[in-house]
Amino acid sequence: MNNNYVKINNNIFSTFPSYNFQDSNVKNNLPSTYPKENKDINDIDKSNNKSKKKKLLFGSTVASTILTAGIIGMILAKGMHGGNFSNWARKLSRDIKSSNSMNSKNYAQKTKFYCKKGAKKAVDTLESASNFTPIKDWIFDKICKTNKITKKFCEKTTAFFKKIVDKTLGKKYNKAEIMLKDFSSILKEYKINDLKMLDAETRARKIKIKNVTKTLDEWIALLENQTQNLETTFDKSFSLGARIKRDKFRSSLLKDLPAKIEQRFFKNKGIFKKSSYKKYATADLTKEAQDTLSKQIISARKSLTNNIDTISDGIKNDINALLDVIKPDDATSMEKIKLLKQKLEIFRKCSGKNEAKIRQNISNEINKTLTDLISNVSKNEYSSDEMKIITDTVKEITNSVLHANENSKGALEEIMTVLKGLNNCKIISDKNFKEYSKMSKKITKRLRKATDLEMGQYFLKQAELKVGSAPTDVMSVLFPIGAGAYAISKADSKEERVSTTLTTCIPLVGTFATFVYGTTKMFSGAKNLMFSLISGAILGLIGDSADKLYKKYKQSGSIQNVVKEEYDKIWTGLETQIKKFEEPEK
Image 1 (cartoon, rainbow, N blue to C red):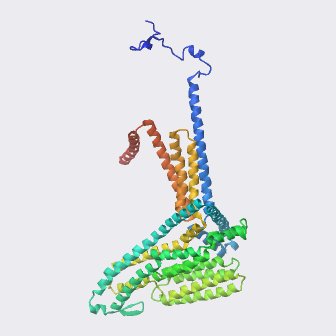
Image 2 (cartoon, rainbow, N blue to C red; image 1 turned 135 degrees about the vertical axis):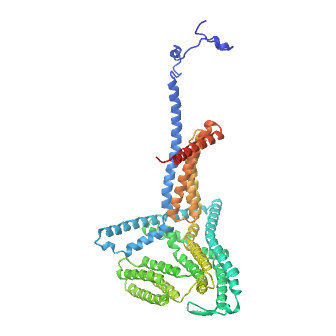
Image 3 (cartoon, helix red, strand yellow; image 1 turned 30 degrees about the horizontal axis):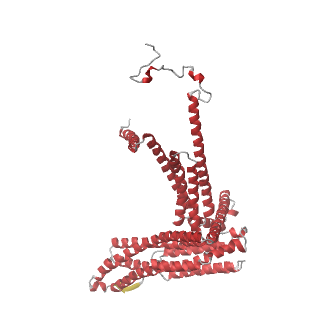
């Protein structure tokens, strides 16, 4: 039998000669268009893969570039005008103004001063860059109002964003309200009723609390009245109905804001005028309205809770407001401000049996320092607006000190004063008093958080929405979606499109979306930026992991196999660690 023939069962082709293609001369007689070596076919495949990768890489690079540019844009467009960053910037400015380090012979102190000064200039630049926000918002809003469809889009998005912002503020107030209602319910339904059930002789007993003597019955009646007053005052000033009423007043104060933005940037001064950029326009133009509303909110809060810490914090804020206006070269006034800060700390920490006397003395010293400050300022060159701010602020501090000496407390502090007096007389147990004290501090803390948010970030957000920030925020999310769609369009197959979506598009869109979400939740500029970048990074890691699992699934064709493989991998790693843990130390 010829060895060149191979018989394969009943295959009719089995009688054909068997050739080894690599050793045959046939390969030399093939047409020139046919690949002569197997490696040529591999090269073609590699070339195709490289081409696909280049296309995919190009799309991903475009998306990444837009992401990077977008992040830089978010810093510039939103700026650093809000929240803790803004507070830090103002504190830095005050430190520089009140610092003597510039003239110090100590090299370290002098270096520190100039570093702070350089940082302040950078912060001022960022705050100035924030003016890009009202400019673009105003222009976009103006364009949208020329068309019915776009006008409706602007109105809908603004209403939607306002709803989210209102809900965020509402949650803060709800937390305070729940705690306040629980506190008053426990007092009325349990403790006050228990006190009323005491025998007549005990209730007729005279008790001295804070130099005031009353019968226990009278103290119970006062406790009952103040508890009811606590609920009534909260409902009057901070319930949903009260906030809606205040929101209408806020809207009326902000009614002319778009016209003021137009006036500042597009009319009298001109868009490129340097003086227009010194301060964040939206905050600067609404400062008077913000102060008006803040005074109402603070006054309402004082009737609820107004302890010495709250009073001291208010005075501290007023002193900082003075420092913002006082000129750096007015050395005498700067010394008076420094003296006020020192006396404020003593004022805050007064305690003990002679507390009233010590506080009265330090209050007299504070008032004398304030009088000297006004006298000195009047001798210097301050504008009429600056003098008005200084005199108004000094009056605020004087009133705060006076009220503190008059023992002007909120309803919550009046209740706690009575409870403490009854605790000292052993009528209320230490355990109960500690519980009431703990709840009281929580109410004060939660109410302050809510009111501070309403007076600060909430007000600023409402002002930005009035100018037209909502539609441009939506557009900032649609922009990366377009970039992601472009990256997907560069993929040649379904697998590549899925891979691009998971690894590029989702993190890209997620970063922008979380930034807009943070804006609506009133996060500060720096906090919001970190929040969005971290979210984007996490989404990127999730996307990469999902992409790897998808590729494994496409290779195996079974979800069960992929799950089993991942489970085995995780278990193998855990088993190794467990064995190491269980092995005795040598």
